Image (cartoon, rainbow, N blue to C red; front, top):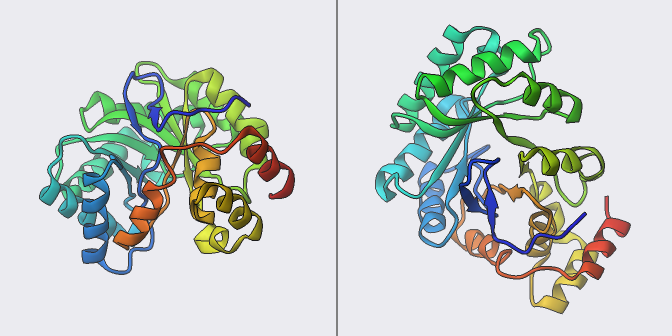
Length: 272
């Protein structure tokens, strides 16, 4: 796989880019701390945030909305995700999207995703109802989450007027083989961006001795090494979650440099 040295990643084939590191908002403990972390991130080069109607039963969207109210909407790429069953009908999808927008305090978002595939609804139907959200002006772009290669191929093929620009999946140095062996080769070819969630494995990477040893060569932490590994791949954005400003500073330090080909290979050979 070719290495990508850019800290700006394409959003599908839209011509737009976002920072290679974004912020996730799952399992927020302190809304005020999360708002402060988001404000710091937005002010220092992280320009994309991911949330979902499922997170805190909508509370995460409200918290993101508060951060946007304080910071301003301009320059921040906002993604949210809707429950899979919302996409069983156009009406249900539109109703759920409008509820999310109300919680966010926005007239539209940049990107709406199907949170995971609905086993009870054909992918083609889900995608048709997803596209309706862009047609209604509720989202600029559409995408999916937790779609494997075969489902993503079906989703991409099913689109009519709006392309699938993102597939958000679990991707980390420990959880990478299926992504790198199957999904990434296709997304690079198809022009779909991968958003890597749980990239830090809930703190596990911070304790990894190999990542620590590699980091010593660059003056970087294991967290920064783990994130840099991901964003070294084409069309990959990592969306770790933190509520602490000092952790945001650490996340920012994952950008602006790249692991050597030898260290990328060492991680591939030794971890996951």
